[in-house]
Length: 451
Image 1 (tube, rainbow, N blue to C red):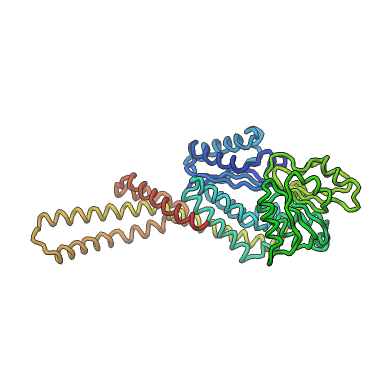
Image 2: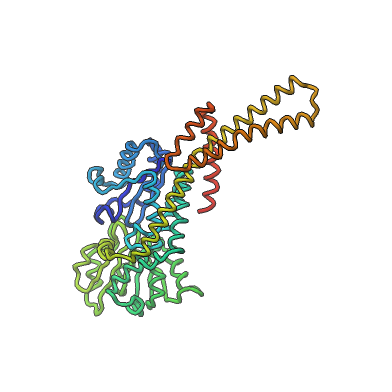
């Protein structure tokens, strides 16, 4: 295993850098394809959220891998390498596993304990699978990260340590007031119809807003989200859709605006916000969850407007969460990292063991064939008994060393046992490689069905 992650997040970079470095979906795909085209990455996938961009890869050289992945991140993000480098972090092998498992549990989130990151990790794995850039290592890693994250939320109190980014943002808008009481009866405008916007709309509906307007570039998606909110068994809120060209008019009627789109430029300019705020009796509350930002930061200075964005959320989330819950999750992560490392080290030697047993089976078949040539008078029963006896002898001779070598290989520093086994038995490297390729193909098919 040579797992490498190079990335930046709200912990390492200011929002201004994260905004500029954000990767649209098509750019993420190109980044992964270029990562495999350039050595030394054998497989890769990218985890890109509103407050982190991380490139995961299986590499054969650490320093070359860091240099190549850093360069590719700079090229595709549009931020110069010299400017980006001070904000990049690097994790390798077990530390990279520990990092992703911590991310999956919400320990590295802006709001500690939030669960949305699990969906984003699932999306990152699906992208790598769809583009065939995620192989056995990253499939195993991300599948296990999802399981670890689910364990953290089901077996610990990490959920109490923080809320989703949407809930946390609304709490900041409410300024200490109960969100349900604060939002009740207000009109809400949600810009965007993706997962974060859908969560925001559902949260506002449960909080008791009087009306929700969904605006999106693709009107059909806005209409579908509005239908979900109003259909039987849904939230029961009055909801309707709107085209993006109508956002300016809807802004003037809204009390609460949540925006989270994939736009590369501003969705709401300072002038538009100022026009909507003019002559109002009640403040205009804006929550910008997009990266890069949807709402002009100049709105902070407009009278009668309260804007909460990713930058202000980062400042507000500095309060310490429940230490006991966090410590419990950290212990869980440490145990899972150790188990994952042992499993990967054991799996590393499996192709060598399979190749050894295949060679032994070939030797048995060859010797039995030679014996048949020298003793042509053997009947079928005698031939079967001799063949079975030779196989039992070979199996017994190989059983203890192959079981023991798997145990030793699963321990830290055990990677060398596969090399020793190949050298001692003079195994053909191509035979071992062919077993690895077949195992990888089987794992890919199986894992794609589990996402």
